[in-house]
Image 1 (cartoon, helix red, strand yellow):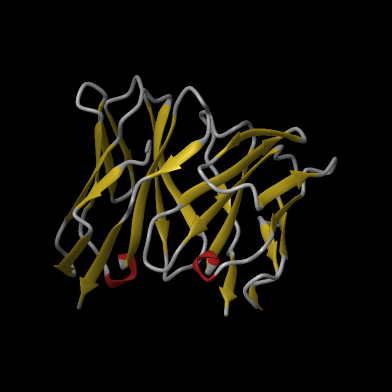
Image 2 (cartoon, chains in turn green, cyan):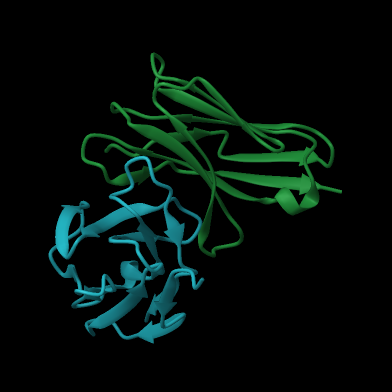
Length: 110
Length: 114
């Protein structure tokens, strides 16, 4: 399967702490994206990083990409209860289809 | 601007029946993706349509099929429903095949097969 793996599968932190999620993939990629899903609803795009980029920021989000290790990480700083959701990485490769990882369920507690 | 719309939002079907799910992409988007998400699991790629053509297909049996219309809307058809087809079916659209373009998702159709 070309599906990526995310780690950890579940993460529980206190509000104000940072949350780090990791994603690994198996194929060559054009870009890697991170999405968020609230309780079984549609996914919302968070950030896209191209294969020739190593780090990208968007607000409280920081994404890194290491193509030599075929891995990416998403850091959410100063987490809030509203950040509670499932987070997925997704990548496009030569086949151009968007392939999703298995997801990390983040719980931010007050 | 309207987002990706899917219909119906919820559906209950009996094993062996057939179902059609519909998706309207964002205006101007030519690519439509379909994904299956079983409860608590990740997204499994089903189908990708672009400019009316099927571009790629996931590892699903032939009873899963679909099409894209000239207005870029899309249908997903599932024949001979099985209990394990119960899932959230998500549609997404993007400008160009997902390469370098983010995907916009609908809210999904929750299919329950009894």
